[in-house]
Length: 268
Image (cartoon, rainbow, N blue to C red; front, side, top):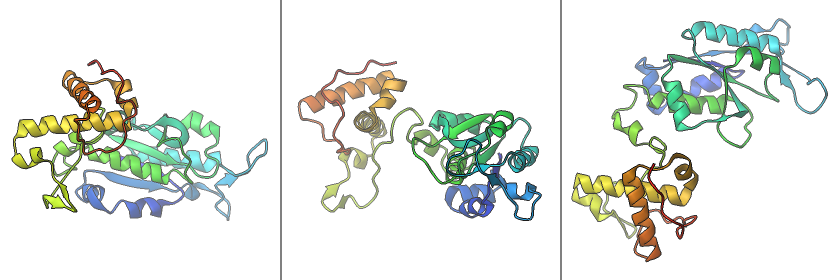
């Protein structure tokens, strides 16, 4: 996959790409990331990329001429038809399904805004999608762009050492991840659950799914309400809720449930 990032701070992008899984993927040629600086498309001595907003108000707006030229230059290097994505607080919220959609593309053009954002005419003529990390504000789009690159890269063939890792990540099946443990068996009086020590694969798989369902119900019930559950997951959730009612459940997740007394959930 080839990804181009339009940014006023190309070094910020380049320096962050050299670490961990993403850095190894770039070294192996599985992902290529380029940058395009809008300042390279200015014509004045001060390389001006922003100006005051029409109508008044605080802050500055990114000028249309250098931004449009930078997006065009980045898109020319990207694969034909690569989505042009503007990282914006006004965009649709990034989730795993959208990450998977982007990972199926041959390339991406990511536009990192700054100041009060892009001139709306550039958005209208050059942007295909607007994407937000969530309901909060950052100083610029570079951090969201890096987050999106990392999330997308994890889904590309060959990037992870074990392909099961991306399948078992949180949100991959609409649930949060289950608890993880490693040696030693006992740490500060806390013991690794016995089922994980016994090595019975079917029991471990069932325990993990039940923990994932319970954790999602406690921490992010909106995920269950929005996506529904498989028949097995629904049965495990109802089992967990019944244990909660009788004080029998000893989950690794100690967060208080949002509605442990509510009815069970029907399978999708």
